[in-house]
Amino acid sequence: MSPMHIPVILASASPRRRELLELVGIVHEVRPADIDESLWPGETPVGHSERLARGKAHAIAAAAGDAVVIAADTIVVVDGDILGKPKDVAHATEMLRRLSGRQHTVYTAIAVARGERTESAVEAVEVVFRALSDSEIAEYIATGEPMDKAGAYGIQGFGATIVERVDGDYFSVMGLGMRRLVALLERVGVTYRFGAPLEG
Image (cartoon, rainbow, N blue to C red; front, side, top):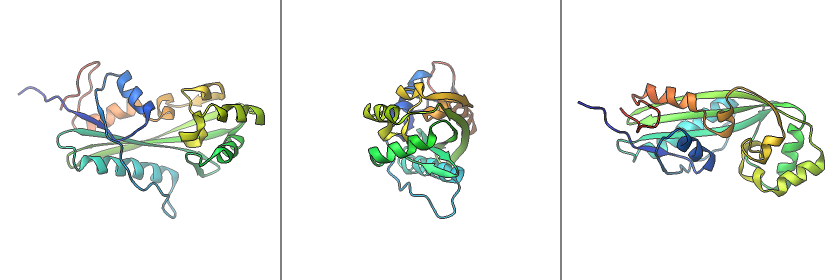
């Protein structure tokens, strides 16, 4: 019996994640998951990120039939604090001042669900910013780019000019580590082949 072509659902509204799947030829539909993303008391950043990714995958997988569901969650952590998406310009300014001229960690959790099975993992990447002046921070925020992104920056946009160094998987900083995704797909019995539909 020949392998089945597996439909793919991305449980995310992120344009970056859609672009990354398209980049490697994974045809998919988008069904964003709406879950409570509050931090639980005593929860670690890694645990928080992985729980949210799995929660998003489960929320969509329940009605996904034979499809494989891909979900992810990205957080920025500095001094042990999770920096989510900024609430407003003042919040974005505060975040960027805090990240200016120093290192922080980006955690991206990926969860892949197929039927009753869910596999997940978290990638940690160290990112260093160059020093930013208040006027540069204001100009960057005025582009609008920081306002819907964890840590108030996007590495694949204007934010590329403020990142000095990345130690780890660049695509995880964008929001979806492709090497890790392919490994998780294999663990739920789905095979990725260059440019071909997923099979399982």
